[in-house]
Length: 239
Image (cartoon, rainbow, N blue to C red; front, side):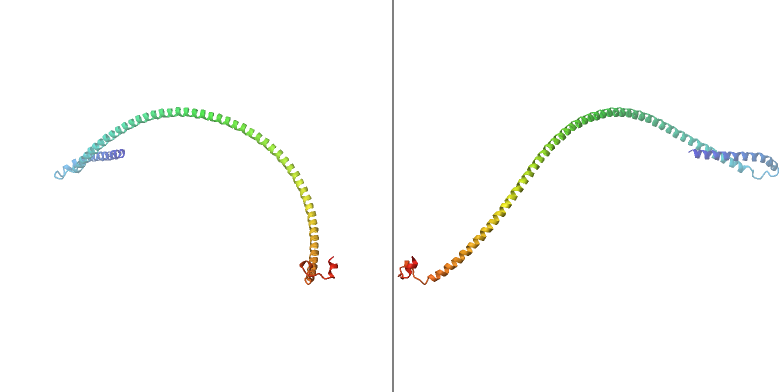
């Protein structure tokens, strides 16, 4: 990745600085070592460790360069793949955009046709509704006029019937008054007759009682019609 490459470059820069410092130190130490060589030739060389370190650093630098080169190749191949993928996606997107544009245009044209068709149908329905409403209004007006006429006729008829019923009520009231007067007269007459009959019955009862007493007195006598001897004194009374 880019961070690994940056770190590798930083390490290489640091090691390069170290190498430069080592070279400067070697250059300055050569003079010193030449002076000391005369002193002791049998001692170990003082720059062997530095040279060894330089060799190790060079080997490490070569490894880092190889790793960086491999990383660059990998990243180059990945970038190439990504570019190809982006190119493919762009082509697909362009194709999709073209197809979507065509579909949107077709949908827009279809929507326009459907809208015009619906508007036409709506206008036809509105016209039909206006016509039906006009017809219904005419029928309603006719019905209103007919109902008003029928109501007028009914009102006239009710008025006539009311007057007739009032006259009939008046005549019935007069007849009822006359019948009531006749009933009272008849009642008074019948009461008088009943009183007369009661008087007559009481009189008859009294006479019948008298007759019963006379009959009881007659039981001791003998009637001639029954075959008995008529007394001489009774002939005058019988005649």
